[in-house]
Length: 239
Ligand code: G3P
Ligand code: MG
Image (cartoon, rainbow, N blue to C red):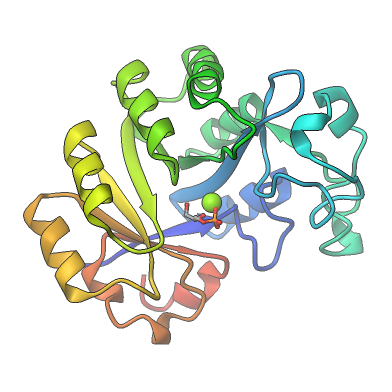
């Protein structure tokens, strides 16, 4: 089996993660899939950003959800990676979906919530955005570490495929996968074992593993359905 290579946060190894530049690089490399992280702003706009705070990937300070979209748009999300990306702006989910459509990509939207967020509210915002998008439902895979988010997605967005993310597969994950009829399980490649793969294969659940940045270090590479990577170039010879 040849695994799908998913550009993690676009192509995060060489481009500023979760930005337009990063998504465009994925398309340029010929990837079919990208993964991005989604979370709400203070004024309930969904934006593409991994951390709940701004310091690492922008010139801003504080929490994403303590800024309005207008405030976040003033920030530079590219310069931290390299001067050549200076001026890169935060993407809204709506802009991201447009980019994905424009480049004929498929996208895994990872929904990030923390203790400050109500899962039903965030999924409600997601619902509003997705119904406005022209992207086919089969080009979108929704995922989250949060079991509450997964349950809400399965209930309110039943037309979309859903992936349960976990560091290491647990009985609770398996119960959730069964309950929501998940499409896939996304596991940390460092903890995955043969028994996990057998269990999921038997249940006909796809196995996606993150974040594999050196193909030679993942012994199950040929046995899983997809891998997330910051460096898709390293997989070109085997894809
Ligand atoms: O969705 C797979 C992977 O992105 C999960 O971890 O922290 O990189 O969002 P993280
Ligand atoms: Mg992610």
